[in-house]
Image (tube, one colour):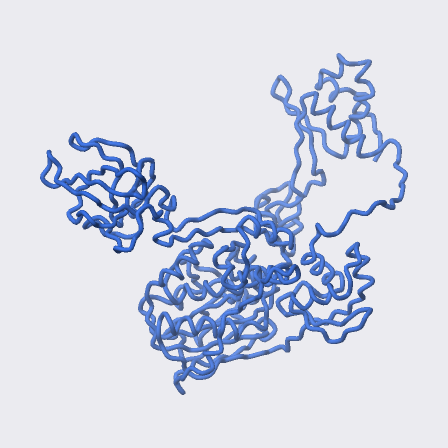
Length: 626
């Protein structure tokens, strides 16, 4: 999960440096695997300053160059040769000093050096917009307002933003943190517990209900596969204008590694990264008969996805369809024909909660991994549908125009209830390893948005937020309390209690290590075979027909979908001086112990691996020590 420092600050009040935030995120269980500083302009215009042209005269050996003296706030003026037509005394400009590295708007890079231009020394360059990388204007140098102060770094004068991007290694159970608001929730709880501010600020969507809407033109929805789609929501927006997204939206998406496409698609991706709820926008013109159907399709139905690949659908693939054909592989990938294009004028915006099992199996079946499937197959929050839908709809109305049509469609096929967990504070503290007090436990649970059904001095019953799909037991709650309280705040015990277990002699593992070391020292190479393999490798074999393969019911991939027919996972291989290969598998590895026993007295014999392997005594020997 990629998280932006600047973006995160929009939801949590904090005054932490990027380094301090990195430490806190890791401490509360959101391990930062990588951290990178990203500048709005490469190099941050280091070395570029505001300067005032004090003197400007014509170059003695040119009819278009000028020799200027500029004030950079330093005691001495700098001489700079400039060929821009708009340079003049009294102007405030941007000066790239000696040593500055510039990246032009077209990607060209230039390092400033002291130079002589037609015999006149120049100690820098007065820059145009495209030479600073902040625009495409090259008609002349960039002229600044009169109140610009000489010597001010360009970075400060232009207000260039610097962001820090964190790559968080989420564990499979923490899909709730696969968004900026999800990370902000945990961060807020930690900061509030430690009296460091950290109030959580959620985007407002109240304006949605007050918007005037058209009475007709709404697209209806029918959910026929309620088990696979427990909740399905949507809204129709007509009269939108598909165009390029504004700078702020493109900047946010680029910061987290997403490519801007158009304002409609970018808004759905923005909401996905903001609150973790996948959305999908359909071109309403492709929804024939004005009706969306959520259902399965017959086995083998062809369907072309957004990447232009035709896929054969399974009868267990949940699809979003019109009355004639499938339009979208639900929760995974859109269809090529129903997506938003520049010609789109009306859209149907989808926000749904799909059964994780169906999404996970379809994703593996078609080997499709997307940002949406990543979240759906781990379990999205079923209660965030409408909130995310309203958030996206408001942004679409703001950036693309249009009118809402009809009411929001919200079909709940299966009641959604919060998990109840009974807590015993004394037992929780034993698991934590420290008495932190009932008050601290209660504060942490409140900050984590757990709802108290009942409270007592000894314990409580809480309702777990629906976005925490992994919290179902008391030990799960203990883990959350410990994350926010801080693992580092649990002191190491002064004593430990351990049980002494007897070890069999000889130690089986030690024997294996000795045998392995002996074989490796005498020219053998160890091979480890995967116990899973690809069934297609056995196609056409007479010795082991493909029909005899033991197939894996739920394979990780098509390359690991069958059990390897050989029972030996480890083998030792020796290539002799004559080019012949000798092998020793794991089942007969115990025989090598005889070789080790003889090694001291029969060293000459042991050095010749071929004699050992071909030895009648070795072949007849059998030792079972493990």
